[in-house]
Image (cartoon, rainbow, N blue to C red):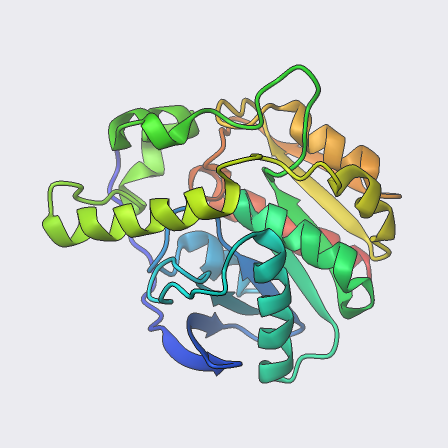
Length: 265
């Protein structure tokens, strides 16, 4: 496993309708809101930096994740979608590019069905939240040890050190438990949105779905399912990747996103 370096971008706290939200922002160009997955929080990743070479990247942390505290009003994914429209208004964004990874893909897809007029483009990266007939929505990560989880989401461990945490550290363990509790609150049952396929017909912006070559956390067919349900959506897979695609191939995945967004102008 190689050691990797990443730029440091400090988080700022922004009040969003009474909720303190931690976000990092860097880059120039058209605004791009990136919604993270169920982990890899508290960091400006090489993926973020690669995106920032071609966009004004805004990377908030979900309620109950990272440095954004839990809130009593949070019950499901739609609450986060509405919350991010409040963030949009707070930041004074009109139309923007929306990119969601994993859990963030579910949130982004939900946002796109509620506020299609707000989006210049939509990109879903190894998204969860849609049912693939005959297959579980995702592997049971709630019962996995950190080692088993990383072994499931990474096909190539070369860049794993970028996001490794010390689960033996009490503070880290408590934080991971808090994030897992928030995740369970959002997706415990059901682990997908039954209404998603029909509602995706509302998405009206250019859309891209980025899938892994071999996703062992989420069925590979989930990417196809999303692409099939969004009118005109493109599907692209990044070779040599698993679910942790943004860490395994950060530059290549970011390039796919930026190239697609450039083609929509």
